Image (tube, rainbow, N blue to C red; front, side, top):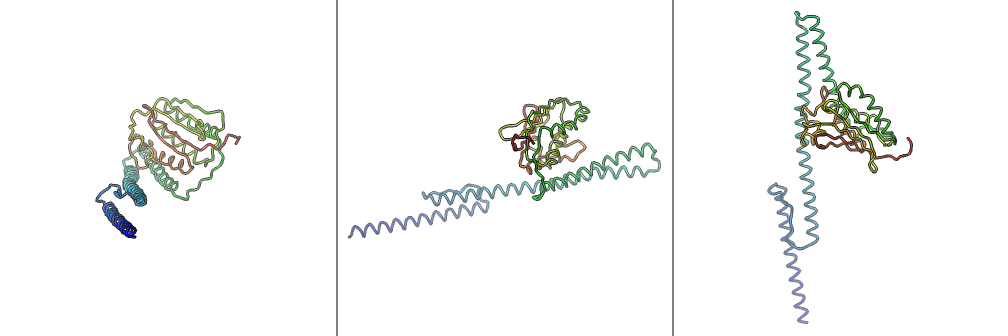
Length: 304
């Protein structure tokens, strides 16, 4: 009987000790969480008491903290992009407007010759077109990135569609003295996508290539496992790894990555359209070459 009483007292004492240690551990976890919330530390929560449930709780709190940190980082980046966007939009719109205003003032000069007036008028028209393209691209990009942007997907034969688009750029390649190697498969390579979106993506990539490439351009369409892959490779000795990582940033303003005479938003629009279609658009360096890669999901190999 005495043994049972001693055993009961020991059990009660162990239980009280366990409760005490658990309470102390919870207080320590609370203090760690407070310090983390008040940005006194960035360390993850740790548990000194061996308890699977407390360890599981600490793990979930750490995961939530990581998500909060990531969300805050995204928010800061969005804020920085917004500030950069305002600066870039202001600069890009002000530049042609200032030019237009200046040439209009010159055209109002009474001593202006007819030839000079015609020359200045042509410049004003070009600046106005530049401004129109800029505003149009900004509007299009904002529409594409909205949640309710409409896409009408249908079954497309990528081989025929790409061939048609490439033919329309033949003269542009000749004018820029660019040579090319084009690899198109005999297969149809069907995808489910919005035809106008696919056209815009490919056209924007080709325009970017024409504006910045020199020498030889390699264009290849092929299938890899369950995807249809379009790659466009051209020489880009002056591009750094940082440049490549920022190519699709709509607010990246390095002159060498912006479309000559365009808005500089072509690659951003292409990236957004690919994302809307469930595809991907990436860029990477391969030696001294820039490689743009589009991937769509293969829709099957029966006839279109």
